[in-house]
Structure formats: C-alpha cells, structure tokens
Amino acid sequence: MNTTRKRMIGVLVGFVVVMVVAVVAYGRLSLSVSPSSPSQTETSSSSTSQTKTIPAPDFSFTDEGGSTLNFASFQDKPTVLVFWASWCPYCKAELDGIQEIYAEFADKVNFVALDCIGSNGETEEAGRATKEEHGWEFPIYFDSDVEGQASYGVRSMPATAIVDTDGNISVTQLGLLNHETLASLLRGMGA
Image 1 (cartoon, rainbow, N blue to C red):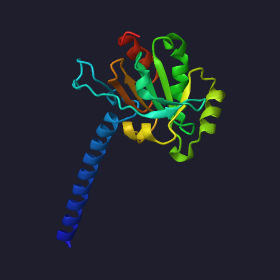
Image 2 (image 1 turned 90 degrees about the vertical axis):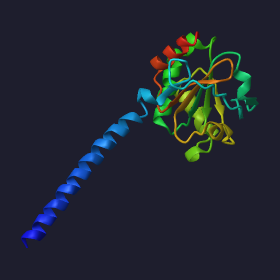
Image 3 (image 1 turned 60 degrees about the horizontal axis):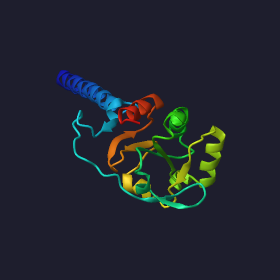
Image 4 (image 1 turned 90 degrees about the horizontal axis):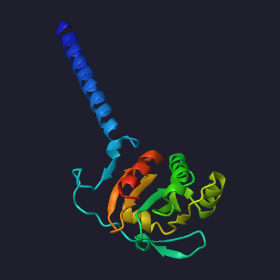
C-alpha cells in the first residue's frame, strides 16, 4: 500500500508540473498573438526583419453606387484597406477611429473600408445601416464575392493592410488598429 501511495503522489506531482509549464507557456504565447499586441502589426520597412516586398493582390469589389472597382486603381496615394463587418464590434471601433482621422488624411490617403458580405450573414444593407448609424463620412465598399477576403487570406476581422503608392503592402494588422497608431503610421509614410 505504501508503494501505491508513493506512486500516486509521484503521478500527481508530475501532473502539477506539466500543468504549471502549460499555463506559463500558454500565457507567453497568448501575449505574443493578442489582437491588440504591437507584434501583430507587421511592417516591411528596412527597420524590421521583414525586408522583402509584398505586392498587394488586386481584386474587384463594388462601391456604394454599385459600380465595380479594382483595388489596383487606388495606387495614386497610400491606401488603408480594412476588412470589416457590421456584426463585429472591433471593426466598428476601428472604423470609428478612422472617422476621427479621416479629415486630416482624406486628401492624402485612400480609405477602402471593405464590408465582407456573406461573412456570418453580413449584407450590404447591414453595412449601409452601420455606416449611417455611426456617421462615417468615408466611403464603404462591398466584397460580395469574397474575392478580397480570399486574396488577402482574411479569416478574422478587423484585418487591415496599408498599401504604398508602388502597390506593395507596407503594414498589416490583425485585430483592432487604433487611430493614433494608424495616424502615426500614415505620417511615417509621408501622408
């Protein structure tokens, strides 16, 4: 009986050690992938480890009037591309932030707020209603055939990319990008 008891204590101690290691590892990993973590914002400037140029995929979408546009047509100035949906509270918070800086950057930056139609039942009507409810002055666009989401590999929202005038992705952000950080990034690009 004494041997069984020692064995049981050994198993319990081993289990506790494994659990402690797992909790510590999970805590460290979750901090590094938190949506609001600065490590989720990647830039392709020479001051970071990512130095290769990544061309922004071209895709088509529609504007609020129903006209079809191509993303490549927005290369006349830096472009902020935000994938969003009306059911996403973080998306609405990010777009509310963009509204706060829109007046400062409207002449220097293209803002493409791409409503991800079909995502969890998202509709153009819901996107239009959300724009009106929040009083956003910037245009919204509709990714009705999921071409933009597929081209950029969007699996969660909001997802943001800043594309330079050469058509290359210079910044990506998974999760909420606050407007102060966005404004700082845009000023850093000369906008």
